[in-house]
Length: 122
Image (cartoon, rainbow, N blue to C red; front, side, top):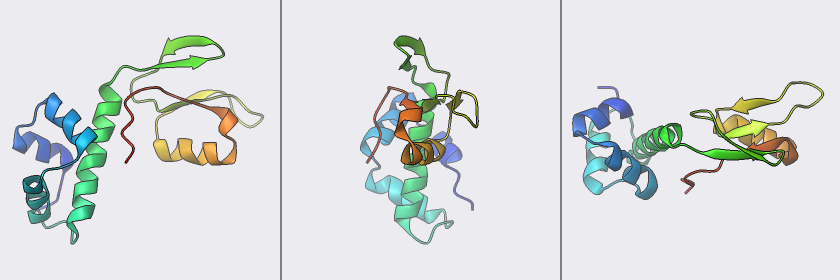
């Protein structure tokens, strides 16, 4: 049986509040047992991380957030994690992938404006 975080949440009968709480606080022991029993992961920590990342993405996607760009505060598009200013190689654009945003920030942090919102970092 493949571990699918979305299906896990549906099967568990979780509502939106439970998804948010899981994203913010982590998993209970019984959740870890259910995930591990799915058999896809040989390590319960990897399975738990998959579910936590799913919950965090869902919260980030559904939480309205604002960003201030050049002194003007605007609503960020659903799912955006950062705004990248234009540079000589590409136009300005929204970034929806945290890993891509982190790579850009590592090269030149001044190119990004991170979208404000719920901080779900460990």
